Amino acid sequence: MALTVPLERIEGKARQLDVRKGLLAVARLLATVLVGIPYVAAWSLSKLWLGVTMLWAAAVTGWRDARRPRAEGGSGT
Image 1 (cartoon, rainbow, N blue to C red):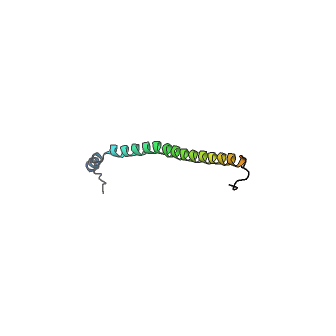
Image 2 (cartoon, rainbow, N blue to C red; image 1 turned 90 degrees about the vertical axis):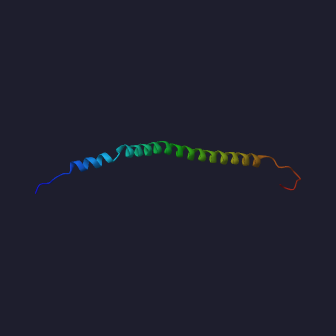
Image 3 (spheres, rainbow, N blue to C red; image 1 turned 180 degrees about the vertical axis):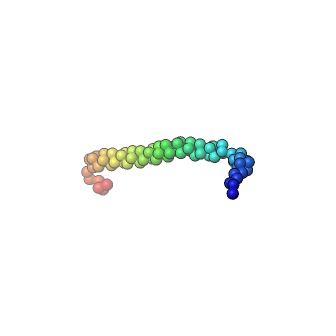
């Protein structure tokens, strides 16, 4: 029994499939990952930095208020 390979049918299906669409999708995914990861990392770092600076400013303000001498004879506040 001889094994026959339908080359014409295989070649026809291969021509129907557009490999460029798949490559374009992979390229778009790669570009999104290469741009998206640094963007999200920078955004997160900026929010972290904002939180740390707000915390530091609140601590300095509280420290200065605590060191300020209190007025005598007031209601105590």
